[in-house]
Length: 114
Ligand code: AMP
Ligand code: ZN
Image (cartoon, rainbow, N blue to C red; front, side):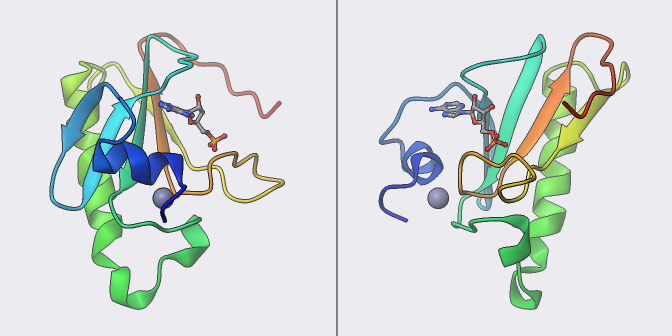
């Protein structure tokens, strides 16, 4: 999608601090981190939300899970523990309309929905 900020980051048209990349996914530091490690993982292909992944795109789920593991190792939170979050849609709190996974870590995380 032309005007999507995460598509622009994937294409290198907006700056980002890259953490991990393969042929299918791109991971970068969140611009407003809420934990010492806060990384955003996006599929390079534009999907608006988790609900837009179809059967023919099933491989992307494995790519995303692999990226979570790689990011956790790169940020040295793989053994300490970390949290992954996918906000979906309006009531899910999704602000950027390009599917993304948050990876939070580097401190003890409380469980808060608000
Ligand atoms: P969400 O509420 O799940 O849609 O989260 C969107 C996330 O994207 C927020 O944590 C923002 O801080 C982050 N974000 C927005 N723009 C950028 C950007 N240009 N570079 C890095 N992270 C960004
Ligand atoms: Zn996009």
